[in-house]
Image 1: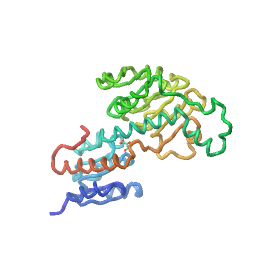
Image 2: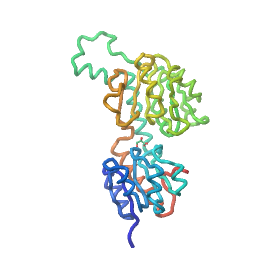
Image 3: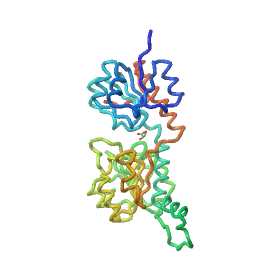
Image 4: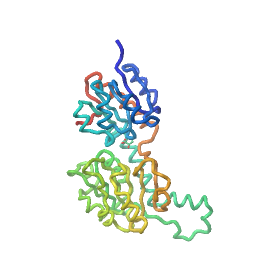
Length: 322
Ligand code: DGY
């Protein structure tokens, strides 16, 4: 009997995950990034499942075009804002993701980005390699300490909690967080639940780690950027659209905030003529929050297992409830 067909939307998925899938599926690797929308729509037709990542939009047209054979989308990511959830529900397609597998490594990236931005690592490195480092003034290239500061985490899910745990060793003066309700884990770490407006007003460091959806889009809007302290450092490791980027650029230009560290931005990849690229008080990373070999390999294997679970009509490791 022939196996059901599975489409893998990128060519970099490790053999460990592909081999698992090949045991149960006819696997076709087809790089969506190299194809036109029309080619993708043709390709998905008749597939049982699609293995994708946040860089592959799974919209209604694609889901509809796949036809009634389509039973599962497995995204190799925590976030699933690239998937049309309403269409998934409408066509009865299950969605697997990799929630919590990457929390620790994303928290590591966040702390790195926070320090690099606050202490001006890239600006300092640039000064060194361009010969600007002469006989330094004792206050040259001073940044801000995280110690004794107020740190606010927007969104206290698994990633937010992992960040809070790491921050615990930095001797900060107060941890603030936003969430739908009080989080015992955050409270145990000394965290205080506040509103988003209180958080942006009071924090020296603001970390955005909330999932992107209709409620959180532009949660860091122009009004809230205007409320930030003039030395505030803002870090985003969620999704670019959580922040009104135009308002952010304006605030940076006018030195109304201290600095910005972004692992995510709009659009991605960021065009080289975007004003953020040339700003000295901005640290940009190309969406590498969970990019450790170990984590990405585990994410690929869990995605494969999520897809296989649908074939077996059993529970996924991580399923999005639609
Ligand atoms: C995620 O897991 O959502 C990251 O953004 C990258 O995959």
